[in-house]
Amino acid sequence: MQVVRLHDPSRRPASWTDVIRPGQFAAFAKSQATGVACDAGGQPFADDAASTCLFFDSIHDARAWCEEAVQRQPSLRFDIFDAEGRVHPPLLTVLHPGRAATLDTSPPQMRRRRMMAWSLMGAGVPLVIYSYVEFREREIILTAFVGINMIIVAGRLLWMNLAIRETERVRAARLVEASRAPRHTP
Image 1 (spheres, rainbow, N blue to C red):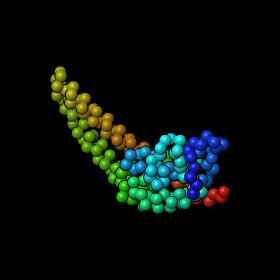
Image 2: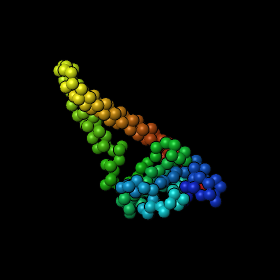
Image 3: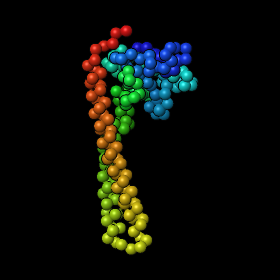
Image 4: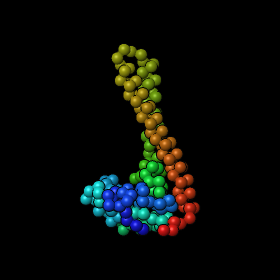
């Protein structure tokens, strides 16, 4: 493991993305509660110039170290990226097992969004139908407006689940590829 400043003007090249080598992985720590970037011990950075990340030579080393760190400090969350940096979503998000259900990608969150979407759809469609059947001048405007918006929100929630599922599929394939890669030797 190596601690690297994200931007170090005295280093050539200055950016961490130019320092990381193919086959290495970068872990970024942040507070699970606030989302604020912090060091591996959970202390927030004084300023952006002090921001750091951790480099690992294998995904297995990165996962093991981060899992150990979140056991010591349950409020931490680590996002692990490959050498391409933050171009893609993190390969892994490591957080305390007790907080895993708070991730947007967790099955309980996906199920909650799906239930909300179908409930909104079930309530929105009858409102639109009522508006169409009960054709009166002003009385239908509110029910049609509310019904149509409920259907739109339901569609967005279902689309969000679909997008998350696809992103997770791609992430899982990238993780398998990274796990199979030979260990990086400095």
